[in-house]
Length: 98
Image 1 (cartoon, helix red, strand yellow):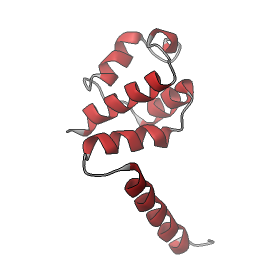
Image 2 (image 1 turned 120 degrees about the vertical axis):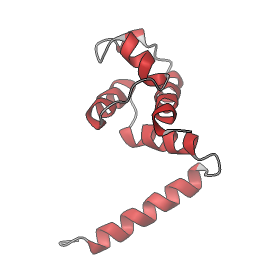
Image 3 (image 1 turned 90 degrees about the vertical axis):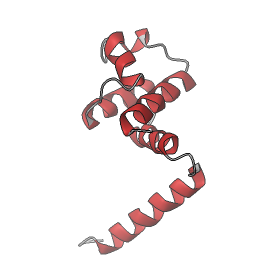
Image 4 (image 1 turned 120 degrees about the horizontal axis):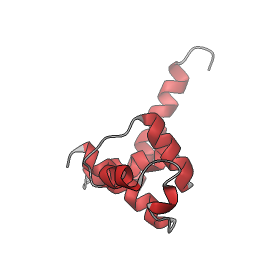
């Protein structure tokens, strides 16, 4: 599955998990734009995803994690969390001033 489609599915899943309608996020963007995002017809910038996640009430990384889980049907949440935690740990150890 392509990332744009997986990201759209993740946005919809996060929004619906909070029982939020597309119309109630109209302050963020138009319902048409949000629909296009959720259907994988458009791609959002990281800034837009951050604003959208905030309006939904989830961390932006939650949306990205959901998208990557959608893309890779073989991964599960525990594996993804472990991988990211390992990578962050190694990056922080290698960073100057850590």
